[in-house]
Length: 172
Image 1 (cartoon, helix red, strand yellow):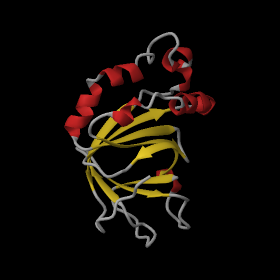
Image 2 (tube, one colour; image 1 turned 60 degrees about the horizontal axis):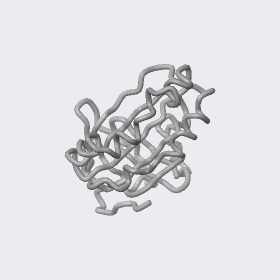
Image 3 (cartoon, helix red, strand yellow; image 1 turned 135 degrees about the vertical axis):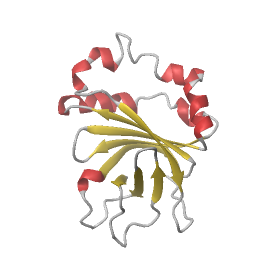
Image 4 (cartoon, helix red, strand yellow; image 1 turned 45 degrees about the vertical axis):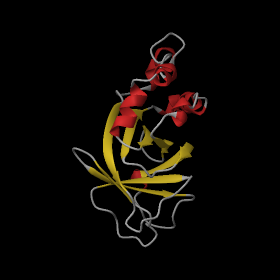
């Protein structure tokens, strides 16, 4: 599965249907998801491969954890996410998750979709969240074991999600 995140204006392309609009404080993104890469001239800098996914993109609130990972650390980073406990998927208000590998560049995106911002905040304050992140800064956590794989600090961006204009949603 492939995800395209367009900053600003959406490119003119008839293959781009079911496009979600994500509105943040500082930018607007357009998100398009496809089972295979579209046969198009879309700029691949906006393209990601979903290495893990669950649920749907239909929801009211999106959170993107943007994590730069150098080339040598990609396999360890991906292994960590593919082995995750998946507790987030059982949280009230959870809609979907995509673990996105960049096709160009070094910044992975962990995209979660929620019913609303309150649902996301409940996740952050939950035992399940603490369990999912308990090893992050511990000796057995990837941040301590392989600190050199992160060339820059990660950052989080949040958005309000508007469904596609056609009223369709994509279940995955």
